Amino acid sequence: MNYRDAWKICRPGQLRQPTCGVYDRAQWPDGADCRDFVFVTEDLASRVRHIDVDQKTSASDHQPVLIEIAD
Image 1 (tube, one colour):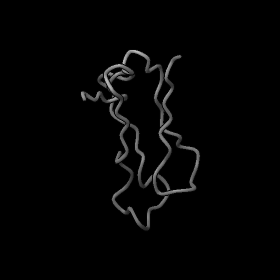
Image 2 (cartoon, one colour):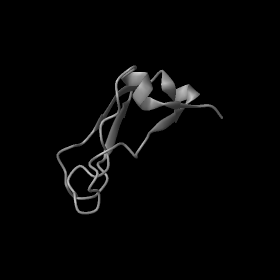
Image 3 (tube, one colour):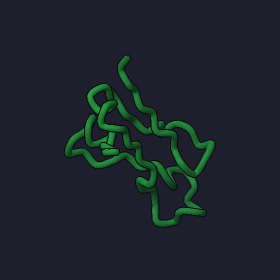
Image 4 (cartoon, one colour):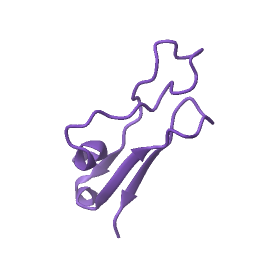
């Protein structure tokens, strides 16, 4: 199967938002970076509408990645 990066589909040329170490500086003293990725199969790629990182929650050391897929 071929997989495509959902971030590059929705946000070509944009750097990924940080998903790890956003709030936990003790565990991640070097700061936040992106460590979570979403890949979709080729048949879903044209249906990817939006992708974003939920920067509001501090419930985990990894921020949720939200993806919207059209019907």
